[in-house]
Structure formats: C-alpha cells, structure tokens
Image 1 (cartoon, rainbow over the protein chains, first blue to last red):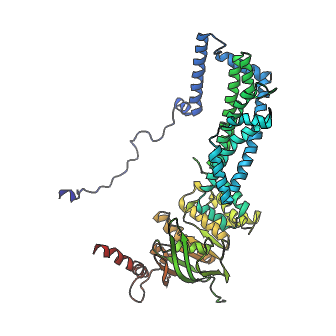
Image 2 (cartoon, one colour):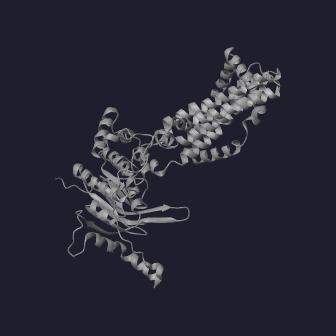
Image 3 (cartoon, one colour):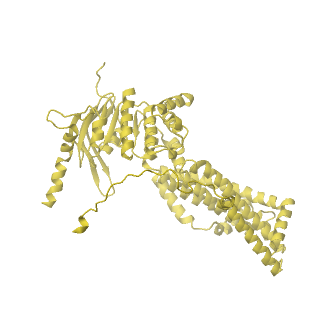
Length: 289
Length: 261
C-alpha cells in the first residue's frame, strides 16, 4: 500500500548563478583541430602504408615480384611525363563514357516505359532480375563474336554493366515517391512527361544518383577487366591493356603504376565528381544527410 | 451583392475505395453546399471519410454515386481551381526554395510565368511573413513555417476553393494555435473560400463559420451548424463545442460501454 503514497517534498526556487562555473566554450587546440580533419587522418594512414611498402620491398629486394614504392612512383611519374599513361587513361575513359552514356539513356527509356505501363513494369522487373546478377565480363566472349575485337564489344559489356543497376535504382526511386508529392504535382496540372521531369525525377534523385554511382563503379571494373582479356590481340588499348603489356615485358613497376592510375581515376570520380553532384543536389535539398 | 448559388455543390455522394481485401465505403450519400467566402469545416472522428471526401472534391477519386460540381461544372479530375494544402510536410518540393515552391505552382499550372510569377509568389510569401526565408530550402524550416509556405502556395493560386486536409495536425499545440489565428487573419484579408477538414472540435469551432458533422463508418451527414468562432452558449444553454461533442460521441460511448456490461 505504501507505494501508492506520493513522497512529499518542499518546493524551491533558485537564483541561477551567473559565474563560478568553469568553461562554457573554449576553442580547441590546433592539434585537436588538425586531427579532427578526416583528410589528415586518412593521409596519415596512406603515408604509413607507403612507408611499410617501402621498408618491406627494400628488405625483400626483388623488383620483379614487388618493386619499391619509390620505383613505382618514379615509373608513374615517367609514364605520365612521356604521355603513355595519359593516352591510355584517356582511351579507357573515352570508351567508358560512351558505354556509360548509352547505358544511362537505355536505363532512362526502360524505366520511363516501366512507370507508364504495367507490362513495361513487368518487363523491367523480369529483365533486371535476370541480368543484374550476370557479371558483364561473362558476356565478353559473346560480345567478341558479335562485335569483333574493338570498341563495339567494350561498349556492349559496359552498357550491360550500367543499365541494370541504374534502371533498378531509378525504378525503385520512382516507386517510393510519396503519395503527397504525386498529388501536389497533379494538383498543379502536371501530367505525362512534365510530371515525370518536374516531380518524379527530382523526387527520386537520391536513388538515381546511387544507381549512377553503382553503375559507374561496375563499368570501370568491367572495362579494366575486359581490356585485360582483349589486350592480347588488340592493337591499342587503355589502362587495362597497359597493365597487361607491362606484365608481359616484366616491367612490374609499370604494372603498379597502371594499377595506381586505375585507383586514382576511380577515387577522383567517386570523391570529386559524384561528391560535388551530391553536395549541390541531394545534400543541399536535405534529402540525404 | 449578387447572392449567387453555391460555389461547390455536393449531392448524394457515396465514396468507395478498394483495399487489398475489402471494398470500403468511406461516405454514404453526403450532401453539402459551400458558398463563396465560406470557411466550411468538415468535422468528424477518424474513419468518417472526411479526408476521402476532400480528395474527391480535389478530383483524385470519383464518387460511385452522386455528383460534385464547382461553379456548376462537374468535378472529374484534379485541377488548379481547387488547391490542396496537406497535413504532410513533404508537400513542399525539397529541391526548390520557398519562393520556387510558390512559383512552381503558378508556372506549372501555366497561370503566370517569369517575373509576374515571382512577384505574385513574393506577395503571398509576405502575407505569411516568410519574406526573410524566401531563398531557404524547406528542410531548413520548422514545421509551422513549412505549413505557412504550403498555405502561401495555395493562396497564390487564388483558387476558387482552398482544400485543407488537417493542415495543422502535425504541429505542436502552441504553433497550431498561432497558425489558426494567422489563417483567420489571412481570411480577413482576402475572404478566400476554404474547405477545411479536421477531427478537432475546438479547431472546427474556431476556424469554421459553417461546420458539417459526419458520423463514422461510413461517413453520413449528422448536422450542419453555424459558428461565430467564439464558442458561446446557445439557446439550450450549452456551448457549441459541447453540443458537437455530444452529437459526435454519443453513439460511441454506448458502443464502448456495451461490451463491458
């Protein structure tokens, strides 16, 4: 019974003190601020890895298996300077952009078809279910028969690697546009293509962007892998072929320099291009934090 | 004054919609008439089909029986002569600033373009006292401010009737109170016609000059009352809000009591 009785306490009102409490706000020390910067921390990790690499390769002393970090850097520098890496990189990027653009265009068409008709929806769902798990590189032998050795085959596999993730993400983005937003669009007289362009695409943009990022990563990997397979018989090529060629000539430092370029281009697109698109769109709009 | 006919006329409207397993009748043979400059409130407990009714007036669904007409024309689809203000905050397009959101309404409906649209937008943004936030994105605004933008957007369209679906229900009590007063001030200003859906009796009494009471499952008209917003005692010595309360919840209490008996 006693637990039903409320404990009686006197009321009180306090004068809030205006001093005598320590720090309210104090600037951080310079070191704390520097270390709070993620780029600085990640830079330190990279530096550490480079040092480990250099020390290990010096101890191993076998440039054929594992060239020194300094040798890799100088090979990278040399190949940039004589223009070989730049030309190969440009060759890869050119093919990549062709395939990527074609893939995006097809994905757009397919999803537009899918949101307007039910049969289109079924079509897209069936196709993505079938082809999304199929690695693009597995289609390369077939592509070689159909399009021969050359850019045609590369573009074909690139389209395959871009199309499905972009279509899948765009479609799921369209499906998740809120009912309220749809009603707002229709309230102001938007129908057909204007409704898609002014309501659905911007509302689904976070998903579309994710699809584009995944599509880009897939395409980049597929391209390098395809070039490695191709390089054997094709006359010219991109970064993948540069790597393959230098392996055959046992220029292992150059192989590392080629891998290095692949990484750098990948990081640049991910952390600079896509990052900036994100900052100027979905983050600015508060649609993604 | 040309005492013209009703602006919006709803005659014997039965609304049904399908869920995955059921065919639900939301309202059954509902009649009401809204005149120009009315602050017409549809009030009822949840499940009386009031939001569905408003959506039908908006043109988003067709009645299975009866008809609805605005200015003598039968409502068949959504249109910018009836502008919606929703409860949900995502009615504002997050990729547009406050000003662009209001302008979007004017340009999409091809009512105005360019400079004229901008001027009109700013005029109504000023009315809801958000001039300072014209270039802010919706996610930077508080809930009350978002609703004010939505109201500004609706009013900028200068529609025949503004449809408000529990616009203040997602706000905290203090903000709601303030928004209700602001809405009345705006009405004093321009005397727009508004069809307002709510489940709150005090809100209905405060906002409406005419209150339609719906009974639940399915929604049927129970009464249509006048209100002067002051909730005074009426002839039978009861406050308007108490009368409404008794009417709406009389059956419900009986229903709740019986199973225990």
